[in-house]
Length: 244
Image 1 (cartoon, rainbow, N blue to C red):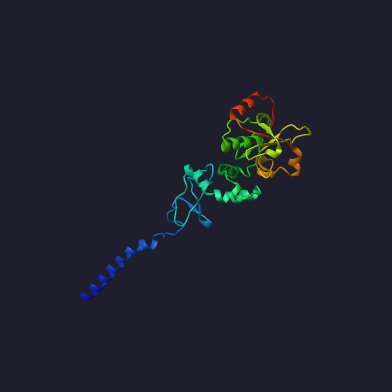
Image 2 (cartoon, rainbow, N blue to C red):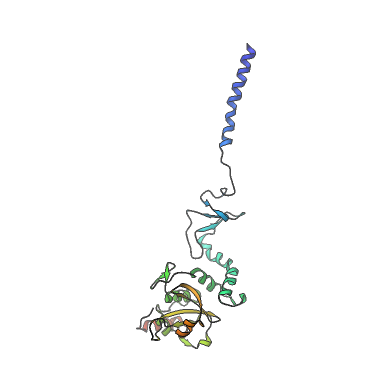
């Protein structure tokens, strides 16, 4: 009898002790997709979207999660990150500008163009949601070349610049066109790059075009160089004509 009671007690104790294994069976398994990324949603190609990220001047809200690093780049380091991508941008724009990679030695210009490239055209617009030609030229000259006093409209920009011959064009010069009616009034502006290429906010969006293209060659009005921001601002204030 005593042996039976001892056997029953032993079985009861063993059954009770099995409960210590329950937490281990229900504990979630850590995976590379979830480890170190508790607030993100994991997608394909090691890319996650974090709810608290914000867009900045050079990066989207998508943050890559690498195999060895799980920290995203802070907005304050956006410019530095863009500089890291400079070699890739050189190859991209060497093709668009029909030049060698070594010719592209202005990182500010490439980063600016790449940020705005493809932005849709919107008359009077000044943002990535939509921008017009003169606003784009204004922002480029200000951000890349430090020209803060460029007037707002293309016609005023033409009058405020020092007119040069087409054969003397250099990077950063302005090129002007007439796009409305038969009169050769300036209604469009772009910024010259090299090899007859210029960047502008066209009706198809911000893009690089060729001045030898039939349309632009036919509608070319002139070229201008901005050399003195103070003189540019004064000329713009004295201008009374309107433009696009």
